[in-house]
Amino acid sequence: MMQPLLLNQMIHQATGVTRQSGFLARCLLAFPDSSMGTRFYQEPPEQLMGLIEYEQRITQCLEHSQRLTQVGCINLPTLKMTAAAKHLWIQFFNSIESGLTTQGQWMEIKDFASKAAENAARLAALFHLFSGQIGDIRAEEMEQAITLTRWYLCEARRLLGPKSAQPYIDDARKLLDWLLARKPEMPTPREILQFSPLRNKELRDNALETLIEHQYIRLTKLGNKTRIELNPHAEIC
Image (cartoon, rainbow, N blue to C red; front, side, top):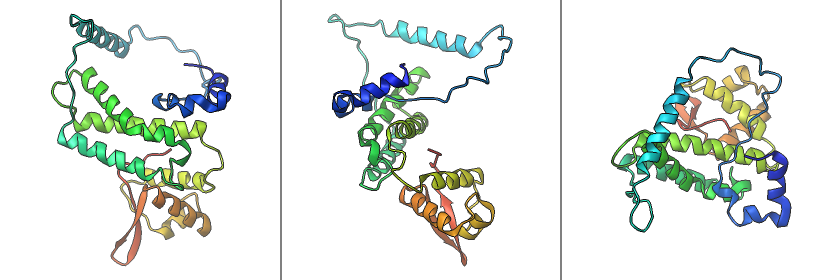
């Protein structure tokens, strides 16, 4: 945890060595909006059951980790993925890789995106162990890890990417937000002009092109109408 000014200095001092060395890309960055002005007083609950359960589980994990070998190293098993979990991981790996092209959605944070699949695998392993599971990493834990990793990628791009890298990104986000709110409907391009925040044909077309390029949507022909099909893994960035 650090102040934004310190993070900015780390990134830009010494010709950005913290990014060029790959160190920063191994971190999961987050910079939530300030809650100042909305932190009104509320009586605290007598017990925070969620926190109590969390502390108990952390204690169990620490006690379990005390099994040391004679050379002082923690003797841990090797975790593998189930076939379903590995399938999800490969899909995620390939989707991120396709976004590293010159016009890709992750082009401005290639260092972070290149580490995304590794981070997802590590998070899935942590979720697996923390929930007390045995055996291989399951698809459920991998899906949770991928969702979280995507959020951190979006956060890294918001914090480190140039604000004007993609001129249509704001409109694309508005349209994606609108499409997500209408799931599982598959609206037509005409309905976008009628009901979405983008009532201008040029803005609509540019936003659709951006979402298609970044694999958030695809155009599907149903009967005699073209409809917008949302990627089931699409999230707002």
